[in-house]
Amino acid sequence: MRTVVNISLPIQLTKVVDEEVTRGAYASKSEFFRMLLRSWMEGRFATDLEKSRGELKSGKGKLLRSLTDLR
Image 1 (cartoon, one colour):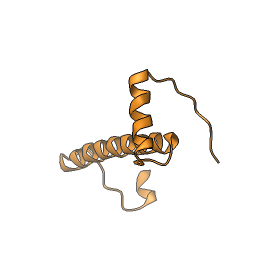
Image 2 (tube, rainbow, N blue to C red):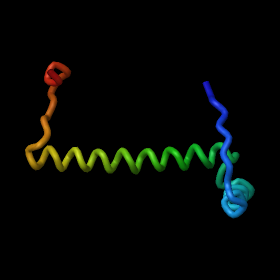
Image 3 (cartoon, one colour):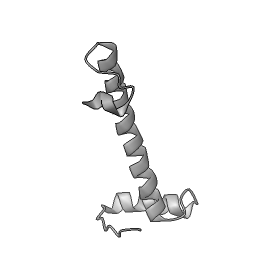
């Protein structure tokens, strides 16, 4: 299922998106923004993962071996 989301961009940013689609880098404007969101999410999750690894190394975290360890 998909949801339509409308956004407003300054002309300069609209031109960038249009140029990328026109040169064939993306099939559509929607695909451009899906890629942008995926990249943002991957970066955020990678940052969170590194933070968690640091907590484990410093002894602040708890390594869970099963769901019962959540209690």
